[in-house]
Length: 496
Image (cartoon, rainbow, N blue to C red):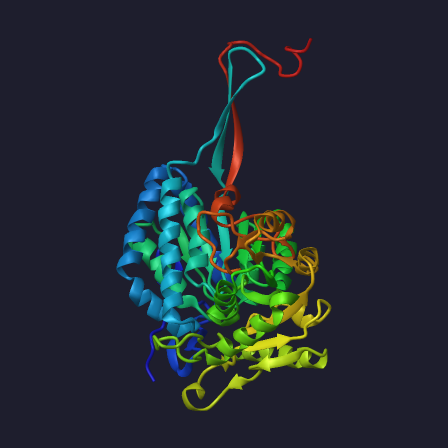
């Protein structure tokens, strides 16, 4: 069997891991399809990448931000030209259907356009000084070398959320892509290289989280870490980064609720629930994993939802007729199966699905049936813990206030959704739901790049992607210019 071998990008050179070891990237829909061999890197490789980024920072930070943005604009054009190829590469390595991988590449395209504009909008603030003949202002400065650790479920979109704002702000980067989906990050970075990004400004180190990821978090010359992944790993990242006083952005798990009130447009709510629960095979941090149904519509919604879930076509995402792709690896299948057993043991009622799919077109892949549970109570683990698979819990409630309380009763707070025609309820939900994102009459998935993305509680630590990314990738510097030609002492010479 022949397949390509990829290397780390360090200081503009493609280099194998110092260990010589590699990891195979397999198609989750057909594990006989090997996408390529990627480096299994360790601390030595990370150190080399950080050193290259540190050296490049000395000159990259001096490039005017609008000129940095022009490179991103050229990268945008390359992404547009290669959208279909990159989408097919992504479906092969990640599994989600082509419609979704095209959307993933499009999100990187959109992020590029958004950040290009920010190259001329890195505004500071001027303000009057309290002393005469003195000018006061504040400016944004780059942080330095930043480490980016990205997940497998959006292997081009999420790296673009981190790389593009970091670069336009004048930082240099070391990115560690997810071990399951490195090729999409390679495609994204290659677009930047082809657009004229100088050597060392972006470096790729491929490896596991416990080796390459940990070394990146702990390296003293890395000044900031942006991490997207599970809450348990995010907690470790924050703790280890604290030892060297790094600033850390964490975007982590979710257990997202769609609330359907009695007055909702039921057809619309069903469409949203089906897409939110089973899009990306449920492998989104914003996936609709809880559907809260007011008692007046619960029976009809449940019957229709289950009927539609049973009809979803599961298979290889390269087949345009397929609606649900595979899970990314065997571990994710095991997790989905384990939560099915947990839910049954706790008394939930399985309405459809619940099993891995094997045989026929599913023989060589990691496939799991779209799975729906009813009779779920707020105390059950299936209602509180992130499954990250095509498994959804239906829960009933009597009043709007009860629904909000159930939605808020978990440790996570990423995305929420309310279907209603009552404008008063809509605005109350926007105020009262404990989440970083609230949709009205739309599913819990579908974020746009120019709005803040992130959550509260165990979902995040207060930073945001999108609108808030430049706040993370820059630091503020206060600047004072005294042209009085004499010593002036603030808070002293002007005191009454």
